[in-house]
Image (cartoon, rainbow over all chains, first blue to last red; front, top):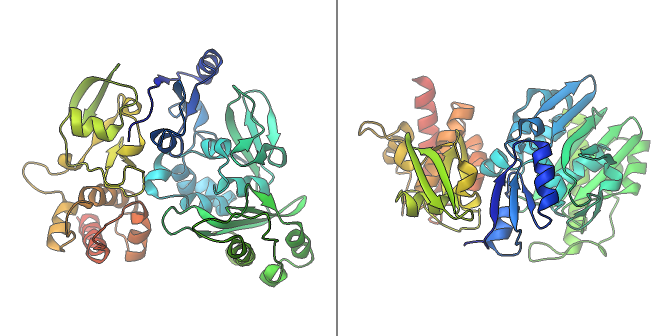
Length: 271
Length: 156
């Protein structure tokens, strides 16, 4: 399959990328391209230009300072999964990264690209929302609570580029998903985190976008055990229904995955 | 048109191509390296797996211009001096292929996985093969081939 014509430009720096984006309003940023390139091949996207930011060293890093973990936007899933720092400070995130797509996707796909795309079945939005991450861009800092605004949509403005994602080490956390056997996208994925502000439960893959489950958060606040969420069901009315699973089945999966995520957080601290 | 230059199987190559040229088409049509296969062309089957700067990637999901300046290795670049790569040899020994269409991708994935893991157990191998599909469903012997190669290469 051959996409429409476009012009390829490799950014030499973040400033260069911003300048090129300003000059080419119909351009798209290219990081790992594992969603964008297949979409262009299907001719569902037709950017005038691709501005490649994947080679920018200033966007590719993993830093730990005390309880703070900062990940550059162009850091690949593979690098996050393999990082001794991430495995130590936030093992649930390393576990998540190690189970995105397949090894070839993980070799090039990036955290910033996934968050900016906000696919309703992407993994990272669940981690960002449950861990109350901060998404830093070329112009501002956006709390995860304000970042995800709906299916494939975010708070990012035109020309704004994600530069890094900042996490704080939770007391404990865990992520479990029921992956579609072919695509490995979660049909339901649940990230459970106990952070200083309380407990947050974020669900991806099941609905039109990532969402929190307050009833589960309240139950886990009383008792942080798998049994606490085992009988809490989410309403299927707003969940996705497609050839892979009905909304009712996805609702069922959310409860099961939540239970497993808590088990994981308790038993292995998310490893 | 853009002039793209990279190193493929140790040789410098250069060509004028459209920016939208996928790496897999560049390898197959410009360089006539047809060992890299196109299976699904939708980034699911892994028949087009090649190494770009040492990482196994799907050449159908990358533009050739992204590989500007990169070191690319295809299935044709594995054998050295008329001798098969140990992973190729293990596929031969263990009957790791049936129709053979997926084999180049399987082998390129395996070589990269062995580089990361060293000797692998069968569960790890199956996890590493998530991006490769064998339409003959000959996975059992593919896993055996990679297990064999990973152990022999780690012992060497």
